[in-house]
Image 1: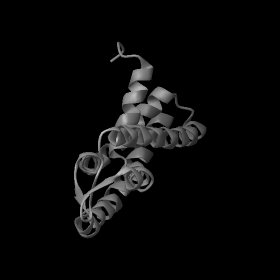
Image 2: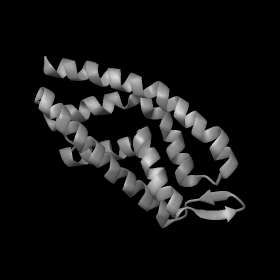
Image 3: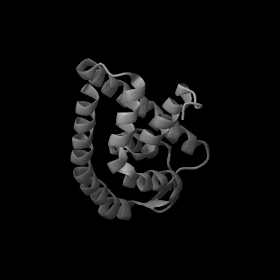
Image 4: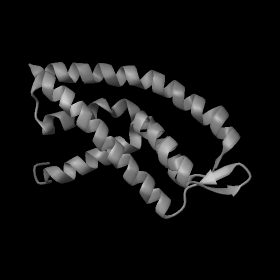
Length: 148
């Protein structure tokens, strides 16, 4: 993978994080989706056209802020390079891959309010409570290996 420039790897990493990280998805939902979604019928909302691009761009910006904060913390603890941090963070985000379906649903699906409130949000919260400790433990293990 040495033939791919680092800036492309960084952009792909940010897109990856923006589409699967539950905190980025939740903040993006509250700030962007709720304001840009349009009502298609009674109690049913959907993102259209340019709103999807704005939703993705906002997610990438949120992922960049989150990654910058995490990199500053990891850099202070282990003195690792950004490339090594990006590798560790990519692996540590793997438990969140199931959240990609929520991202796709929020971007392309018509979401009915009652289904969202009674099915999607409880499932989202339960899945978050399960995957965050796994991701955190994986991060700690990989950071300790990087320190040695």
